[in-house]
Length: 71
Image (cartoon, rainbow, N blue to C red; front, side, top):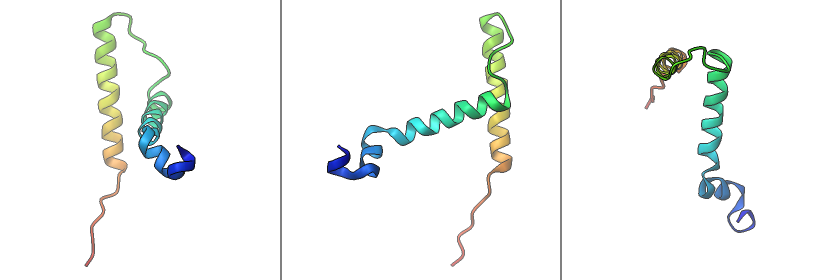
């Protein structure tokens, strides 16, 4: 497929870029929050993940620049 479409065409057709984005998000989660869950019960694990994801999303919102198109 790379020979037919080129490397970028292969990445788009195979979904490689989506996979890379997901792997980056998981890596960021592990670095910032922790490598594992500290809670033992399912309900508490779900709460811990929800809090961690909300925290990461908020951090990303604060760190993302807003682009304004100048005509």
